[in-house]
Length: 328
Image (cartoon, rainbow, N blue to C red):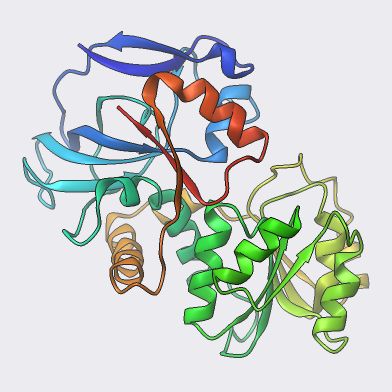
């Protein structure tokens, strides 16, 4: 028997229980992996509280790293004993071991340790598809300015570094001076404390000589929505990829016209990872950025698997900058 964090009903962290589970053997297209570390992400909170409903009872956790213990029929890119890492549906990474679909599980280079891998897969692959694929008209060139909200979080700190490596001028926003400083230390060109500067769009306009930016990457949602649209230059792209402060309000399509023929998209990482070949290519790009040192993964906190509830408390209270992992 193995151990896994499960919920019987949506709610607060008190709904999370560590229980014994029977993992079994992998079927066709599956592998069994023994975790050395499991990643912690805000999407786990959405799954737990019911914002993103799951069939109940449900297991939590979207990313992990460990060793492949068994391989099902048809799996050719992994072997027993391989070091591996993933972000994948369905949830279930908060566990000592699990059986799961193999297509999104990638062989982990020796240069990257398990904790780093578990803390970077969902976040790093999110940044990869944002900065490489979710682009405004004409793409992005060195010197272009972009706005990235929640820049001191796990995704944000990776984005700051990746954007700098691409030669972009990333304008970070965060909720405190300390977090703004952290974003600057990780490669942001500018940082705005949106609590002390509520009209962050005016500051973005000031920083860009009144032009605005080609693209805004926004995982905050309700609190930043209107300001984000006001940051954009004509034909700019609004990328809404999360809703940490609540759902984006209903949108009148005419607003996009009034603010400069704007574009709007609501992408997800799992759409990009749906095909194994593309998943591998995205993973190779992320591994190269990390192994080369151009992107460093900040593991700020480590929790025991039995303390997953406390980890969620800290995540929702915004006490975690960078990445955090659960250790089985």
